[in-house]
Image (cartoon, rainbow over all chains, first blue to last red; front, side):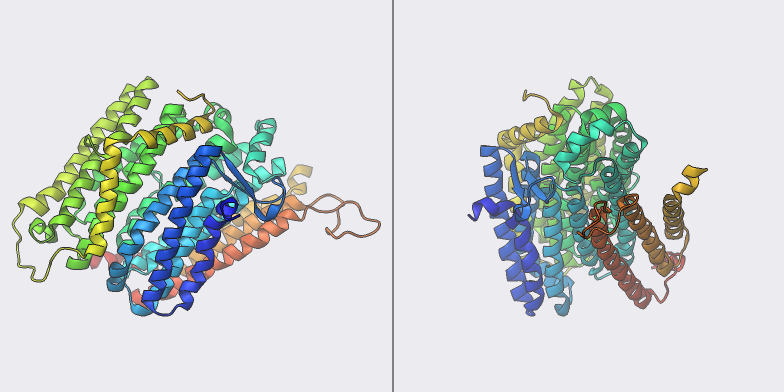
Length: 494
Length: 118
C-alpha cells in the first residue's frame, strides 16, 4: 500500500512537514523535523530507484484520475536518478545544517528557514516526478519562491539584492515556460507530457509549436544558468547562507538540466529538437562559451565561494555539452556528469561552510596556512578540487572520461580538446586554493580557529568518500545512466 | 485586416508583455521592476484566457438547451498562475522593503554604487 504510493509520498511528505516545521517554534525541533523528513525522502528515493530498475517506468495517476485528464506522476530511470541526487544531498546536508544555520541565522528565522528548505525540496522533487507540463510549472515556482527566501536570509545585505535579481530572472524564466506550455496546449489540447509527445509530431510544422519550443528552451536555460543567462547565479551562491549554497549548487541547476532533457527528448522528441530546430548546435556553442568563460573567470576570483560559483557555470557547460551531442553516449555522459558534479560541488561548498563557521570569511588571503588549523577541511577541499579537475580515481575523472569518449565517438575531436584544455584551467584555480592554504605562512595569528565540528566534517567527507568510490567503481552509475539515456534518445542499449 | 482586428486580444497580450518586459529591464526603481514583472505575467494570463474561448460557446455550466461551452481548463490553470504571480509580487515587494531598510534606497543604480564602495 505504502510502496505503491511512493511517487506521491515523495512529494507529499516534505510538503506537509513544511508548515509543521514553522509551528515547532524551537530551532532544534524544526531542525529535527527537517532532518527526519530528509532521511525519509532518501529512503523513498532508494526504494523508487529499485522499483524503476526492476519493473521499468512507474506511472502514478494522482487521485486515480485516468492519465490524459488527471495529473500523472511518471518516474523513469532518469527521474529516479535525479531524485536520488536530490535526496542524497538533502540527507547529507541536514545533519550539517544545525551548527552552520545556528551561527549564520538569527534564532527567530530558523523555523522559517527549515520550512523554506522543505518547500524547496518539495518543489525540486515535484519537478522531477511529475509527468504534467503545467504541474511542472507549479512545482518550479514552489522551489523558486522558497529559494528566493532562502537566499535572502544571508547575513550580508547583498543577499537581498542577489535574491531580488534571482527573483526577477527566475520569474521571467518561469513565465516563458508558462507561455510555451500554453502554446503547446493551444495546438494539442493536452498537458500530459507523454500525450504531448504523441500529438506534437502531427502539428510540429507550425509556427506556434516552434515558438513554444523557443520559449521553453530560453525559460529553462535561465533556470539552469546556461551561459549567458547565468548572471543571477554567482551572487545568489555567494551571499546565501552556507547551507543554502550547498543545497542549491548541488540540486537546483541539476533539476534545470533534467527539465531540459525532459523537454528536448521526451516532449518534443529528438527529431524535432535536434534535426528540425537545430537546438544542438546552439546550445553546444553556448556550452563551450560557458566552459571557457566560467573557468577563466573562476581563476581570477579571490572569494572562494565566487570561484566555485563560476566553476559551477563552467560545469553546467560540460553537462549541456553532453546533451548537445544528442547521442546515447553524449546524453549518458551528461547524466553521469550531473550526478558527479552534484557530489563534488556539494562537498566543496560544505568544506567552505566549515571555514565560514570558524573563520567568518572565505577570502583567499584569509586562508593562508589554514592547513595547520583545519587539516581535515582543507584536505576535503583538495580532494574535491582534484575531482573537479578530473584526476583519475575520482568521480570527476569518470564524468570527463565519458564526455570525451562521447565527443570522439561523434567525431568531434575539437570538443574533446576543449574539455581537456578547460580542465587545465581548473587546475589553475584549484592550485590557487592549495597554494594559499598549504604553502603560504599565516600572516596574522588566528586564535581559536580550529577544525570544523564533527557534525559538519562527517557529511563533507561522506560526499568525498562517495566521490572516490565512484572514481574506483562507477559500473552501477554508468549502467543506470546508459539505461536512462537510451530510453531518452530511443536507441538500443550498446 | 480581419486577422489584424480579429486577433486583437493577442495584440493586447503582446503590447502588455513588451511593456512589462521593458519596465523590468529599463527601470532602475525596484518597485517599478516588480510592477513590470506583474504586467508581464498578466499578459500571459490573457493569452491563456483567449485560447479558452470557443466561438458561440457559453459558460461551462451544464444546462438544458446549451451544448457548446468554452474550455474551462485554461481558466483553472490561470487561477493557479494568478496565485503564483501574486505570491511572487508579494515576495518581491517584501524584498524591496528589506532592501530599502538595508540600503536606504530602492534605486538599483544607487545600490550598485553602495555595493562597490563597500
